[in-house]
Length: 365
Image 1 (cartoon, rainbow, N blue to C red):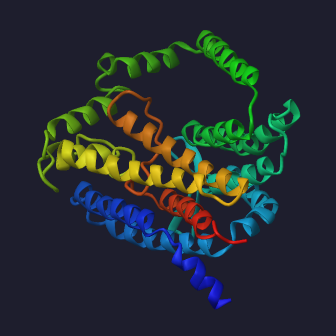
Image 2 (tube, rainbow, N blue to C red):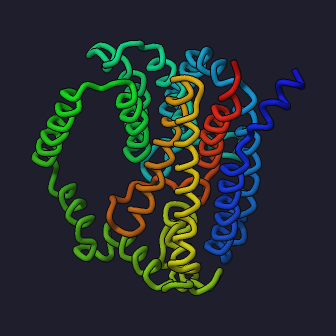
């Protein structure tokens, strides 16, 4: 037993681990800076505790052979669905969405974040058992149902932003599984038709929100406020930034949700272009390394697990940073390891644990 553990430990990916830890540490520093005038909450201290919990969960996920995780995923999936149902029945409503469950007042959990990890495993198990070159229509429907049920339950909260984060897992899984070209073309056509039909059925105020996203200056004190203040913060940082704790947009409270959704705006203002590019480089290295791990995985299950995890991380990164600079809609999707939030941090470390799990067992017979 100990020999096997030592063998696996030799293939532990210190590169991904240290990159993730570096992002998390920068996140703690920036969260402290963004909330330094709200000492009663001690957000940065709470973030440190959540990082430690996340690291524990990462080690836990790594220590269990990913094949064993896949074999037991029906139980995990059932628990995930029950957790989302529990949120609808007993959850705490925050910003109009019932997405959270309070655990004794000490910790608030957002189950949808952790459910993504389960969906990655569930889809990977289903798709890796298919032996044909192309997926049949029935297989596409079944795979869609695996992701579709959690998506539906999250949308009922309602939390459209979190529901969107499940879609890349399904899209990447179907693509790797062998989606026929006609299905891809059909999905594109349906997407265009859905957008057209959706626009026609939108109410006036909903259309106004879209107009404001495209042109934030239409409503600078309302729906466009977040986007405008974020872009001011990022632009004012210049090349080297104003220094940690010295960002005027952050200190004076003009930047909303500065320790959560818009933490990258704080980075842009305080660490400047150089700091922002450094963060992006750290993320890029994690993504590239993860794809390399998928390429060397011992089986299809390892490939699907790794690429499913990558799809979640990459979507979060692109959406959050796009939101910060005004090229993506504001959805409240956190930036992995950098944004304040326990559920997001734990889920991210668990996804990284899955990726490292695949690497550690790539030479096992």
